[in-house]
Image (cartoon, rainbow, N blue to C red; front, side, top):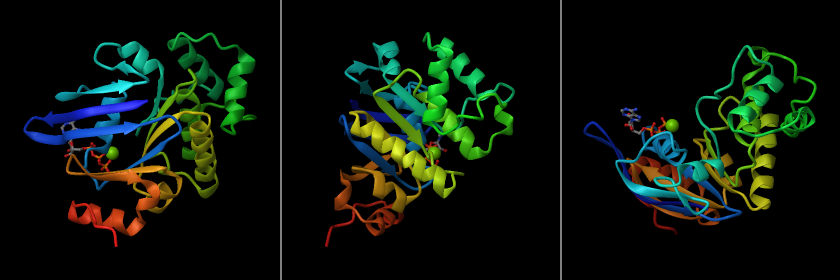
Length: 235
Ligand SMILES: Nc1ncnc2c1ncn2[C@@H]1O[C@H](COP(=O)(O)OP(=O)(O)OP(=O)(O)O)[C@@H](O)[C@H]1O
Ligand SMILES: [Mg+2]
């Protein structure tokens, strides 16, 4: 579902990514970990089609991003550092706006159903500026999944969420994967991320230093790899 080969991104003279290869299949939750500046958000932006790699290629749901961008993006939902919501519009107005932008013909009851899926029913007619950070994050998720994507890419989605909201997000992510979706999840919350991920990818200084099934990792091996920039041999 997600395939990246030899992704390199150079900003001026700085390498943000150096030959990243990754693959995630249907039903997988790929947890991407790495210290600040490792290249995680750069990777997310490239997969989302928001930035072009200096070299390498991305395929989403079988569509090469370079040549079939519209199809690749149509199968992908992204929640990045920004929510892209309009503060002055209500929750339902935001969804209506983005549905139209995606060329989707969703009627009012369908939009309300999407809001109830993310636990925002009852707040649909309030402007987003009245929403707490967690509520905005929920609405951002509803926005990112309006077109029923098969791939979901989340960059630090737990930031600012309380316990209840993060459990809620966990359930949403697990259901999405259980129904055959593929999730790529970037997080600094190693314990939490390890708990939900089915596979792990460790990125340090733009390189993949380790990857494998989540049960082959512990929070400690991930943190040590962060610090040393190297794969930690398993005991
Ligand atoms: N638009 C840009 N212009 C120049 N350099 C950039 C740009 N975006 C990212 N970089 C550089 O690329 C490297 C990777 O940044 P990136 O944002 O991908 O890291 P990250 O792993 O997401 O870090 P964090 O954990 O802090 O979110 C950093 O050295 C950063 O300064
Ligand atoms: Mg980042």
